[in-house]
Image 1: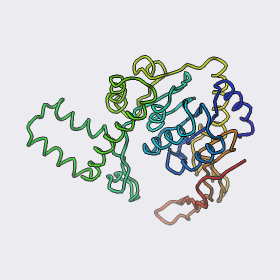
Image 2: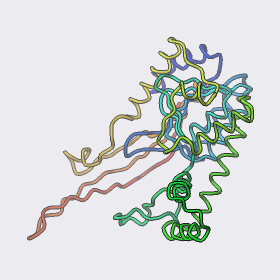
Image 3: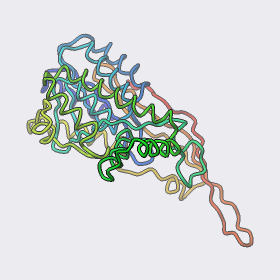
Length: 335
């Protein structure tokens, strides 16, 4: 809990000569959360308590989320400070990496990882997942996967004739709605524009910025490609800092405590929770925004899991139905 981390937060602020903000989104299997707009108001409250200051350190752990939220968050934090850095204990993927591009420098532990920033489109017009009856279950459409499909036709199969390329695009539009394909193109242009604007504060120069954008948006390959500290610094040329042994110990202790609190390494399985009972009241902590000055905002899911056993009938064995009655889901403030 935060009370156990307060001393570590104070040590980190002293070590970095800054004010600290902590932002964690859950990567617990089955209870994942993402960077989303609802966090902006929480950050505003913490920043109002901190006030204008020379430097802010953002302790960030996330698998990503909404790109425009990442853009807004960087600009919000920067309106309260002159120097902004991101401290990465482990995962910092997708829009988390986008946030890092807007920092003056990035502190990466040996476990820290950045990732590609090519977005995936999730919307009501996305293709349905085959074999799933839930109409809301949709296949995310990766911007770079669409580009890779077209480039494969051109480069690997040598298709250059405009007629055949048109047929390929028409066939693709039968699988993926044309409006979704349009959104794919728009999202790629948008994220490249956001990345370029955010890197302004790293003073890398236009040539280096273009190399970084091309790599993060397409050349790195699949979306789960991980970029470690040496590659981020030596190949991409980002302003990467290796923590001292003392700083590393502080970062690791903070993250270990948060990882335990959010149970990040314990997959969520309702069947196990209901193994010994027919009902289970739950309260899952799935995200944190913390500071010394303004306590904790925690994203919580609360509800009741229920198990119903349907008696067997001739020709059909007993069946078990699990239901999840979600009572509350949202942010709660803790002092």
